[in-house]
Amino acid sequence: MKVKLSWRLVAALLLGLVGYYIVFQAFYNQIAFKTIFPYDGLADMMVGVFYNFTPTFLQSIFIAAVIFRPTKVHHIGRKIAVDAILVITMLVLYNLCYLHFFHGRVDWGGSAFNAIFVFLGIETTFYVLNFKNSMREAQAQKQLALQYRYDALKAQVNPHFLFNSLNILYSLIDIDQQKSREFVLSLSQMYRYIMSQQNRDTVPLRDEMDFLHNYVDILMKRYRDQLTVDINGEDSIVEQQLVPYTLQLLIENVTKHNIISTRHPMTVTINIGNDNVTVSNPIQPKTSESPSHVGLRYLTELYQAHGKEFAVSNDGTTFTAIVPFI
Image (cartoon, rainbow, N blue to C red):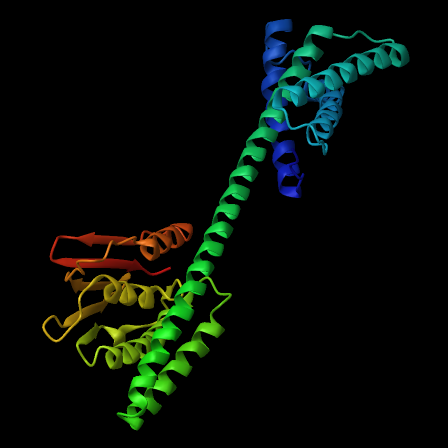
C-alpha cells in the first residue's frame, strides 16, 4: 500500500490539524478547567498554544510519516496494528523524554487521547486516498483492457473488409475501368485514414464523415446502388469528437445483419444534431443471421469510458443508434 504525500495533501493535513487542535483544546479546557478559555489574556493563551500545539504538531508529523511510509504489508489489519504499535511507542518515549529533560507534568490521559484522535484521522485519510487510487487504477486498467479488445476487433474487421473490397475490385476491373479507379482511390483514402487514427481515442466528426463517405462509396459499388446512405445536417459540423470508426462500424452492422438486394433495397439515415449523431435503418433481418452485437457492445463500453451514453433501440421495424459527441 502506498499513497504519495503531495504538497496539496500536506497542506490539507496541516489545515485539518489546526482545526482539530482548536476543537480538541476547547474540549480539553472545558473538561479540565470548566471553561474553554482558562487563560489570563492573549499572551497567556499564546504560551499555552505553543506548549500544547507544538507537541501535537510534532506527534502528527511522526504519525503521518509512519502511516504514509512505503510498505509491502497489504493486509489492512496488520498495517493498522503495526502503525498503532509505532505510534504508542513514540508517545511513551516522547512523554518520558519530556519528564526527563523538562521535569514537567505529563497528562498521560490527555496526550493519549490526542494521539489516538490524530492517528485515527490520518489513518482514515490514508485509506480513503488509497481507495481512490485503487479505483482510478482499476478504471485505467479496465479502459486499457477495453482498448486492447477494441484494437483486436479492428484487427479482425480491417482485413475482412479489405478481403471483400479486393473481391469487389476484381469483379469491376473487366466491367468498368473508371469505377475501378474510383474504387481504388476510395480504398486507399480509407486505409490512409485507418493508419493515421490508430493511436487516437477520439477523432473530429468531420474526419470521420470523410472516412464514411469513402466507405459508403465502396459499399454502394459492392451492392450495386441497392444501399443508400442519406446524411442530414453535415453542414452544421463544427468541432465535435467521436470514437474512431464509430459510423463505419454502425454502417457495417447494417450490412451484416440485414438483407440488401434489388427486392429489398436499404436506406440508412444519418442525422447530425447539436449533441449527437443518430443512425437509423429499417430492419430486414437475414434469416440465417444470429446477431452477436459485439461491435455495439464495444462502442457502448468505449463511450462509457468517456462518460457518455451510446444508446440503441429496436422497435421491430427500425433500428436506431444514438452516438453522443465527446
